[in-house]
Length: 65
Image (cartoon, rainbow, N blue to C red):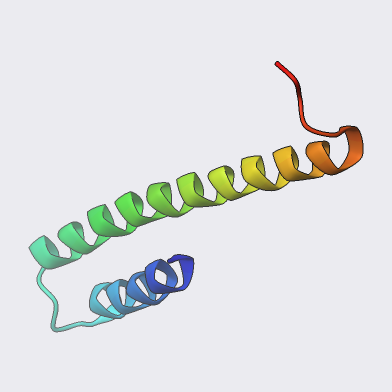
C-alpha cells in the first residue's frame, strides 16, 4: 500500500513540475499529495504500533487483562 502511495506522489510531482500544467491542476495535485502523505503516515504509525505490541508480547508474554 505504501509503495502505491509513493508512486502516486511521484506522478503528482511530475504534474506539478510540468510547465504545461495549469495552476488549478497544480493546486489539486498538491492537495492530493498532502492527503496521501497523511494516509501514508497513518499506515506507518499503525504498523509501528503493531510491531511494538508484538515485540512486547514476545518479551513479556500475552497480557491476561
